[in-house]
Length: 270
Image 1 (cartoon, rainbow, N blue to C red):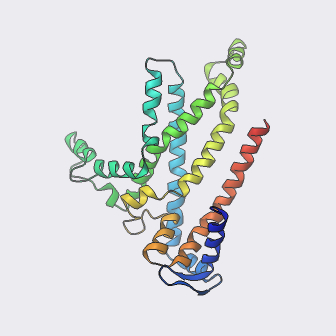
Image 2 (cartoon, rainbow, N blue to C red):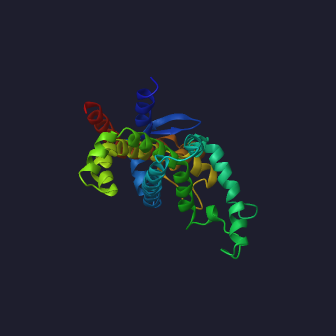
Image 3 (cartoon, rainbow, N blue to C red):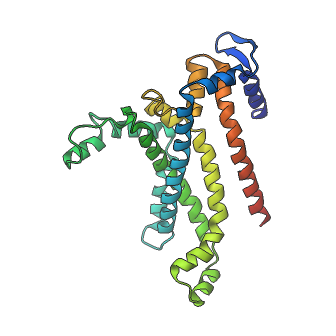
């Protein structure tokens, strides 16, 4: 009721002319899809979506793995640090967007003020208003929020590695790096893969940060496929074309979902 019916209805909308106020206006076949692919800005939107998704998730994976390795060490107040590390992930996305909007404000933001004081820049920089930096800044913010998720997931996998296997490897003369390479990595790899695929799916559909911080601008510099679908459907009022836009992404994500299900099944079998 709550998944398949809306999904099938979206497919039906994508092959019809649907007005936000006027309702169903008539069957159009693949006309909405033709309009999507003939849009001169669509290649740029697709490129933004790929950058937003894969660069952000890549950063989260690398930094999250390093964070998990650090949190797996023994040190004072380790439990407290682990709890504090989850704050960005636990913070609502809207609040995260508002926090970074204030931090990056060119007139009153702390980041610009700090950069000016140390001589890093000569004048305030509006990172979110510059076509060259808007998307990169959004990717950084999303990575900042998502790193704790990777850190906790990988940390849990690290703690599940049997100590006797690592001790046996050390006894056989393996260095610390070799222990991680031949014992730890194979053990945590299924968790890492599942976490990456799951996070890719989430990030690809993520709209909150982009909508609040830049609205997809300047121009289409930071517009992604989900945001384009939302703007087309609810701002322009063309529900049919908006549905067609998001169905293009749904087709791509179907492969990732199938891959995720396969990885999950393999892990359960093991």
